[in-house]
Each structure stands twice: as C-alpha cells, then as structure tokens.
View (cartoon, rainbow, N blue to C red):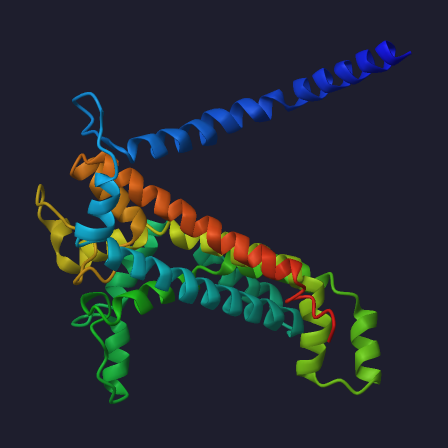
Length: 314
C-alpha cells in the first residue's frame, strides 16, 4: 500500500513537472541564465574581444567610487520613477473619472486622450522637442504673448526632466483605458448607499472608489515603476535633437544632455557596454537597475498587503 502511494506521488510529480517544463525552459533561458551571466561578468574584466578574466570587486568600486556618471544617472532615474509614475497614475485616473462622468462627447474625449499613446516614442519625442523649442517653439510663443518668459525646456538642466514628465503624461491614454474599465466596474449600489449616508464626493472616492480599484492602481504603479527604470529612447532622442548632435553625422554623443540631467541608468548600461566596451561596469549598473526595480516592486506589494489602499481599519 505504501509503495503504491509512493508511486502515485512520483507519477503526479512527473506529470506536474512535464506541464511546467515549457515555463521552466523559458524562465531559465531568458531570465535565469542572463541574470547569472550578468552577476558573473560584474566580477570580470571583459571588453568583448579578449577572454574575460577575474577582476574581483574592481568593477563595483569603479562604478560606485570613480565613475562620474553613475550617481547623476541614479538620481535622474529615481526622480523619473517617483515623479513620472505618480503624475501618470494621478492624471490617468483623473481623466478616467472625467470620462465616466461626462454625458455627451465621452467617446470623442476618450479617443482624443487615447490617440497619443499610439504614437511611436521617437516620433512623439521629436514632436515635443519642436513644440518646446525655446526659440521657435509654439509653447514658448504662447507664453510670451501672455507675458511669461518661457523656460529653455530640453536645453535647461532644471527643466529637462519636467519636460520628459510632460511627454510621459501626454501619452497616458493606455492607463486611462485601464482605469476607465475599473471605474465602470464599481457597483453603483455602493455609491447610492454612501449618498444616503451623506458622504461627500471626496468620501465617496476615498471609501468606495479607491478600495474597489486598488488592485488596478497597484498594477498601474508597478508597471509604471518598471517602465520608468527602463526609460531610454525618449531622453536620448530629446538630448540628441536639442543639442544638435543629430545633424552631425558620425559625431560622438554622450547621453544626458544638458549637463547629464537626462542621463538614466539604462542609458549608462548601453554606454558602458556598447560604446566603451566595459562589460564588467555595464553589468554592475544593470544589477543596480534590477535591484532598484525589485525593491520598488516589493515595497509596493508589501504596502498593498498592509491594506494601505484598501482602507481596511478606517
């Protein structure tokens, strides 16, 4: 009897392993092996041509102690993660609530807000650099007519990241659609009960809307954090166009224009690995980027588990 039970358990385990095998192969090939290789290269000296050699902690000490680009890139990435993600979630939720309340023209408004999210990132960035050109752009022209001296936007280190945030918020149509679906799924009976109890508009949002859409908000924040940590094309294209480097064929370009204010960790990984052929330092920066995304995601999920968004206990 015991041998029969052991045989059944073994067959069940083998059957489960067979069903999981496609996922295990994909996870190992596209995540496990690249992660292990990155950790290994972070302790080696490797330029892509000669055979890699063990270098100890020299890559880590160079990135954290001697690299002039790492700390500006880390500060810029953290700024974009916090500010851009928060602005996109708040604006996307606000637009979704606005569309659900409008009686006429909701379809047109929904289409107008969604269309920018379909624009390719490079094309959208080029359009924004033209619109925000401090000398010839229409935005500063309108500000000048109103008596306001417009900023230099992508040419000013203090305004380059806010300009990128405006660009990210402009393409918030994808989040708007997700929030719109979640808001339409909130039971109307709960709003009616809250109104009978004399709840204000803010109290209905805080105690009815927010708890019902909390999983969607968490999804939007987590995906926004991951997207912000991988921010690459928009700041690179904006810097190249604003600096005029795009018009000079063959000219070397250091990302981060102006004054390293738009340099991100993902740009630094590319620069170290494929422009300077220092794969060891690039692996260290890639691991920092991975740890950053993992820490933010774990913190958000932990906060969600603590019912910060559900309002439990209020």
